[in-house]
Length: 407
Image (tube, rainbow, N blue to C red; front, side):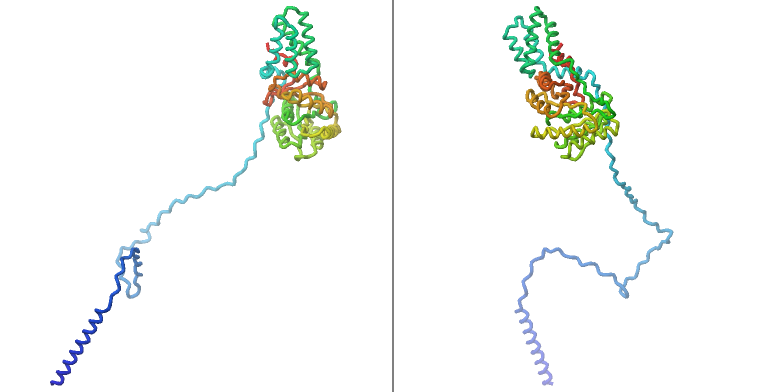
């Protein structure tokens, strides 16, 4: 019995010692430092999957509906996109045909425009002639006024001599008498008997052919287009030949003028042969039964030889169809005496039959009309008095002088 008690006591002591060692070992073990609170947001775990099989929940009892009681969801209105047709590019509308202003009396209607530019010439002469004593100094002033207006030396001397003689015979001079006297002498100086008609009547069955020449910058192509309007206004049908192939857009410019009055334009490639285009223009004019063919020629030629060769070739080729009825030289009135130099060169190359003076409303030197007629021996047939389409007018000496000296 004592032995059993001793064994039990030994076991209790052993257990107590062992427990103390374990407890002291645990006290000596250091715990890791606490981590700071994380700023990362807590991610909530997804809900658990529904239980299946034996773990499935017992379904709850719900009232059931028949098929008839269940309504179908309402259909949302779906907008059907409208059918988009392929865009149709409309053809550009044909330009409206214009009816040009009648040429009869056109210069009279443009008289105010001409009078503004030429006022110094006419008024200056009347003022000088109205002096009580016309001494030599006064006559020299009259002569200087005429020369300044580019009348030219020889025509000026002729006019002054005739005025001196008539004033001496007249004696007493009233303003009305002086105006009538000056008007008569100026009209005489301009050559009232010269034929200023633009000839477009061909004796054969071919159209009348008019060739327009001149230096670029004088308004040559524009003048050709305006001349087409003059002829259409007089009841003639016109075909245009764009033989100025050396200047960019010259053919486009001429075609625009033609379309406005219903005249067709014959053209070729830029830099093409002008003579070939002129030939085709006359050929088309014959085929269409046109009354007139207008040929716009090149003017940007650097030498007289080149000018002669080019214009001469055009003239020869056109004359295979028939004779040329008119060769009109376009001159810029604002160039004054420099225009006479151009006129001489062209006159040596081709037989000029008439002159077109452009920009006459922009210069006070209206005497160039007299000078150029004397220089070439051919009349001024048309004058340009503005930038409007109908500002090209047949030249009328009487209306021109009336604009110079006023009423």
